[in-house]
Length: 272
Image 1 (cartoon, rainbow, N blue to C red):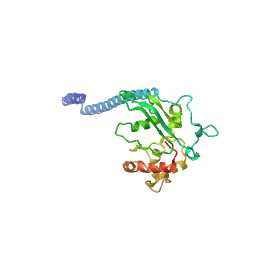
Image 2 (tube, rainbow, N blue to C red; image 1 turned 180 degrees about the vertical axis):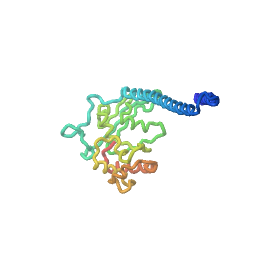
Image 3 (cartoon, rainbow, N blue to C red; image 1 turned 90 degrees about the horizontal axis):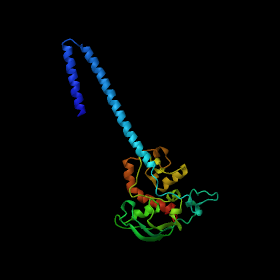
Image 4 (spheres, rainbow, N blue to C red; image 1 turned 30 degrees about the vertical axis):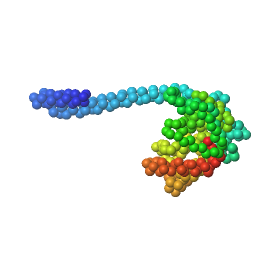
């Protein structure tokens, strides 16, 4: 509506100035000069308005951004959180690759676990849930949608804590374990892969710190990524190609099978 009024006012001004030109009170050159100045003024004014509007939106978004950092996490590592001693080297530091140290793997146990989601406290997901998965065993949780299959994996990763009972890994309550260590040693293969807008290599290394080229190449071979990257995983040029719809469609059909095989080969008897 404001645009229409501006156009109408513009037309009225030029009509009146045109009349003055006809009676000789104003020269046509002055009218052209006026038109040039008014256009420059209007463009500058519009740019200023857009700049102010964008700045205000930016300040509001920045405020929301800071609010996220002010959120206190409800789940965190305790000050005296531990890493199991069998995964600590002689220097007192975490072993870089626990799978190459012939460890026995992880035993997962749920003991009388009660759980309901914080946003749906009236819906009981688990009541006195108990089970034990020995290291190296493959277990399938089968049930209808909403029965708690995904919830079990979320609890193991400590995205939530149970309302009652405890979850143990190698007889240690996961609340006592270092949270970063716990999540780093859990592998998740989603039914539908999530790919970021980046290169193949960037997607593979997402969230991985200080990864060597040797370890990167090994991961590519184990996950069979090198089978659909032209000239193999050693080609740095192809690894920097962007992941498009073709790669996404391919991974949707291949991810579950290929990663299952690679996990079986690499982490036999030694994974969660």
